[in-house]
Amino acid sequence: MKIGKETVPKTSISTSNPDTIIVRGKDLSLELIGKISFTDYFHLLVTGKQPTPAATAVLNATLVAIAEHGLVPSVQASRMTLAAAPDALQGAVAAGILGCGSVILGASETAGRLFIEVQERAGEGKDYLAAAKQLVAEYREQKKAIPGYGHPLHKARDARVNALFQVARNAEVDLTYIQIAEAIEQTIPEVVGKSLMLNVSAAIPAVLLGIGFPLKALKGVPILARTAGLIGHLTEELDRSIGFALSYQATREVVYDGEAPEGFVPSY
Image (cartoon, rainbow, N blue to C red; front, side, top):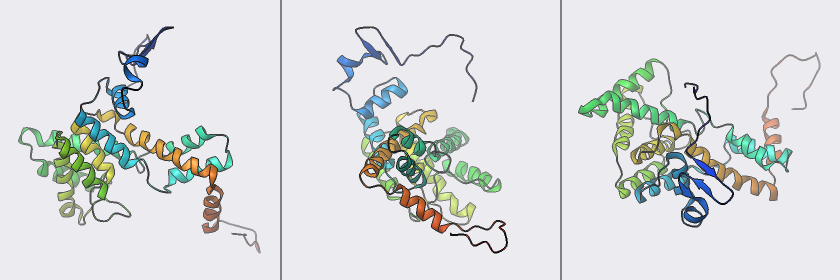
């Protein structure tokens, strides 16, 4: 990623004066508040354009699909942080979001880049299956994980995948990236030697790229959605704290295999 060379800070997102706040060219108080949903506002903030009804349906569906995922590591980190500092909700939310990387949530962006590369290799002939086979073989040779495929729990295709794909089909958006995602899924058993089914992290870019959502903003969608989920968990944490219970459980499972003085017996 290149570092910007601008010498004068510029933005086209917002400005204001004593009477008016302008966001993406619109009067916040007169044109946006009470007249636009948060999903549409998010789209406007990121792209500078108000979405079509089809784009709204798809973007909204992805946010709903990924907001909650149980006591995954980022949620546990968030709840344990709040248990230790119950006055720092913002810190607890940050603790959860800071864990968003290539394994948790960040796979949507890397899967999207994979789809774009398949599309480019397929060229005008649009032989997505051949391009997918070639690229998956390269991933296999380089011992790289295929982002968005396989899941520790959902061995069959993640149910959220079909739900998101159906929303896209109903909205009649560009299905090119769904075709690419399914081509990759189809070729994996032959190249890898086992089935790795689509998971939600691949479904999200497959449908969002179909509405023209920016590739470089893909990671922001699961981050935004999971922020909502974290606030839900943290609200529960304040009423029914399990943060220390999670910590104690981890401690009970720890096995110390380092050096120790003769006769020393650890308490765990």
